[in-house]
Image (cartoon, rainbow, N blue to C red; front, side, top):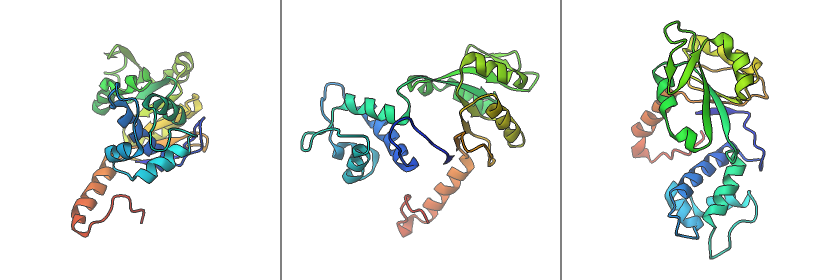
Length: 224
């Protein structure tokens, strides 16, 4: 997965730190509600980082927790959500209603984390006018009007690689503030529009590299 131009209304964080905060948030979500404290060592063990790394990341968010006592899971959840920007709902459009697009549309985790897909777009004549998960598929020509009407800020792009750049350009021109791209292509967007690309083939290549060299004890965190 690659990213560019990530910003936040909260503390200025590196992309790596933001990724770890997302992992900490998953840990907190699963934490028993009756347990009033959680320690850095418990978070570290759950997500596979060091205690010191957890403490550094959380210290960047402010004065949280007490030494020897731990953190309040509810307070920590609130602060992390604010740092990641998920303390408020986000309205999302999905462009490309193929197999992958429909699978993402059915994923319940988006809504539970505050992401609501509010409009679908596709240029295939057989799909335009069809309904999926209660949403009508609209033609790409409706993008500017629909994005304005729905108040959408983010877009998920699951179109063929040859169409991805032109669709992304249209999304930017229509006022979309950030794009999650699943097309296997490098998109070029203006600096003010954050882009995260998920290329599943690249992820599998990274996995085969790690498996092939596992006997050399190569750490997944190496940057070289």
